[in-house]
Image (cartoon, rainbow, N blue to C red):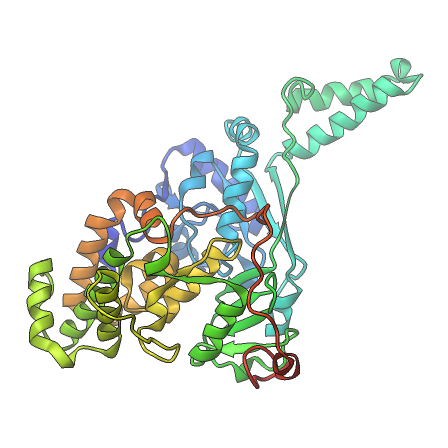
Length: 453
């Protein structure tokens, strides 16, 4: 992992905290939220204010995320909005934090010049002691204030100002006037410089969670389902009609098709599908070659082509499937039949534009772990977990590739791979309906005779 850290591929873009004033504010907020303090005088924080150094000091990487459920946060600067979120337990957490900061950026900027802002991502559950509890999560509400209660006091002052303006006898209410003066000394003139933070409330019908081995929940689509990364049967009865496993590619493919969630890379507009296929083939080749003991640390594209010719039929079936599709894309071959049970199938897809785009790309990354670039971009925690088990040759090649071709232009790479990423709001135009249901679908469900919860 040291190699990834040195190349900026792990713990990158964290915000450094090294001034005594900021450390003191952080400690006040940490005590306010958790009752704990840190002895660190120089550390780094993510978008939520979590510090890996403090996590090591306290022996608790969830010190700001009790029960892995309601994420607490500490804001020292609005620059945290571009930092990553470490130890994420839910896919929506970083997006909610980033959107909250951006929606209140001017107010937060004014607040953090004097104090830290502490808060929590509140949902309807306090713990997820069973998989069923995950389905009680419907919306996220952000609650935040400075450790000194500036927002709370500003709201009180605003209420008293309204009383003073609207009540006939308020001019002679010495107590009310004294209270207003006392609050104004703390908050300033809230009529000219409001310090109240906008209410932030987000519906989360679709999300991924790391709990229970990993679970993707899709409730905002025409045919809802949950897709389990771990043991599907161990989840028990879930309050959703269909529960699929990652070892059921045919049913996952049908789920994608019925809900219009994916599109073939070679037919997607605005990207170079052939170039993406070639790169995926290179990643599969590197994995196969490293497994066979070849030194891939300084392999060039020419070296990879020569190696592919040498290995020939020893290459995985996924490589040959993508090669056939590439020949069609470049006009030199027939359209290959790659069914959903073919090892190359999910490598040929990308998420279609829509509210579930980010989540689908994360699921596709888990279904195609040899595509290390998509894995790193869309599912970092899984990337890090798998990285630990790779050979040194593959670790070196992948780290060098990502540092040279992704880290230098992240936005450009994402646009080239996935196209323009949409916002989370519903599209204005009504989408063309997906495949019609037949009587059989009504009887046994769109993915066949799967277990019903």
